[in-house]
Length: 66
Image 1 (cartoon, one colour):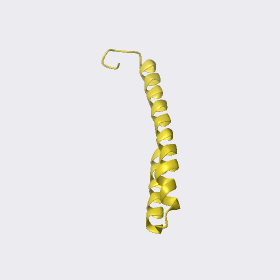
Image 2 (spheres, rainbow, N blue to C red):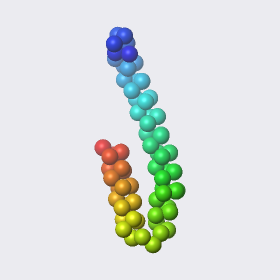
Image 3 (cartoon, rainbow, N blue to C red):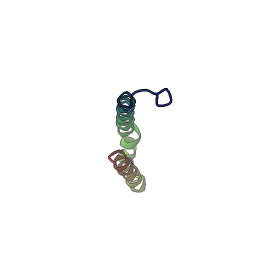
Image 4 (cartoon, rainbow, N blue to C red):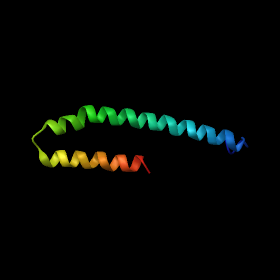
């Protein structure tokens, strides 16, 4: 759009639309992960794996909130 000389505000609006879609996709992935992989790990007796999974969730959450 920039290369085609589109109006700056139109380009920014498109960027925001893409950001919104990516946030929605991230939310769906997180929910699925929590319901499947994370839930399975929490039910296991493997304390090391539980801690690893918890740290992974915290890391991704920090990155998302930057």
